[in-house]
Amino acid sequence: MRHAAIGLFVLFTGSCFADEIAPTDASGRTLNLDFETGTLEDWTAEGRAFEGQPIKGDTVKPRRGEMSSLHKGEYWIGGFEKLHDEPKGTLSSVPFKVTHPYASFLIGGGGQNETRVEIVLKDTDKVIIPIAGKNDEAMQRAVVDLRAYAGKEIYVRLVDEASGGWGH
Image (cartoon, rainbow, N blue to C red):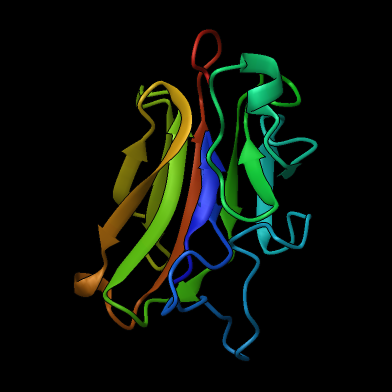
């Protein structure tokens, strides 16, 4: 699976790994989990937290100086970059079948449970993997074990239920 940057931050993004495999839909079309179309195609937003997304380029460095987003590719989801910490919402990918044992993505932003990336089973809407940032603008790689879900459909959900400091 390709990786993505989510900011809450997530990026199921461009090529960091030579052997990366991009998730596809049932017809074999590569999904826009990396946001590299510059749009939210293959994602559904609820609430206002993800309005104006995705973000192009490192907008963290100009506003924070010593910090950088460390995203990969051109685009990423930056929960603070457009509307700051106040709005709340979710951003959910289309479902896709688990065809490989592991997934990788980049995550940064708030470390509380209210700002997180979730891997969700499509048939039950059960969250199988929740991961929060570490109160850091710099994205860090997360690798998740999906072996128990081989052949099942999952989706990725970015959750921003926080306002105030690190509410992204």
